Image 1 (cartoon, helix red, strand yellow):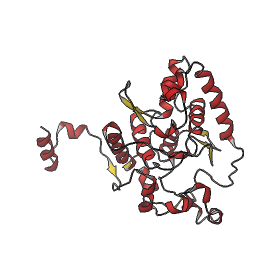
Image 2 (cartoon, rainbow, N blue to C red):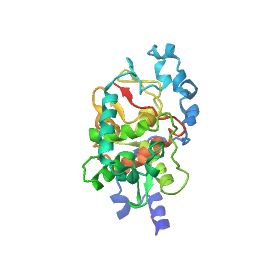
Image 3 (cartoon, helix red, strand yellow):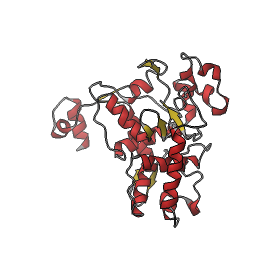
Image 4 (cartoon, helix red, strand yellow):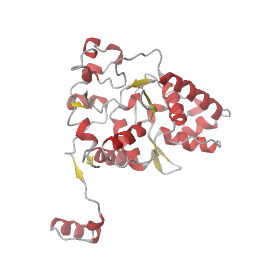
Length: 290
């Protein structure tokens, strides 16, 4: 049956299945390496920002060059000592300790013997009980519900807990496996979604973040998608605290696309794809962006 359908589609013959499928346009599907080092072949700038502790601050002060440092998590003027992300971090710790009074919350999230170090670096992951892949914020919502607490994915408090958990993996490299099973399938779906044009602007994520790297968009130079996920949740001076999937919502709204709910399967696939592009890059939170 599949072979017959393929032949009919090639011949241009209308079929019920073909008529029910929405029309989609895609940017050219690029090949990506599921490692931050893959940016050497995309923007060629990885060597300039591979070590966050040794950035060339002369480039940072030059509007024509600072995009090459991939420092969207440190938009100028950046002050690491205090910003809204630190207050969110305190809130996240408060919520976590209340939820984890008996150790069940951490165990539900996958922390072995209550150890939080490294937990963030392995999300998104396949959840055997749910039989689907979940991001950290979705896991927080599910595990909080088991403790009788509502922490909706995308809410400030949910993202604050996620930020606190991420801080326990500070400096540790992201390390998700996308070479087999459901995670490999999600990575492939996310890569395709990254290139799918949508909305009244008829743009895909890749329209900017792959094909216009270094060019200006609203007077801001577009940076590479590699390494970005390691800084989320991020404090946005306009939107307070923002998880990665809330960032997807914002991008959809900006491009005239109907956004999805955080935790949707499409957003999670996209998160898997982009997280894989941060494999090998250290978690760096709390971060700030304008």
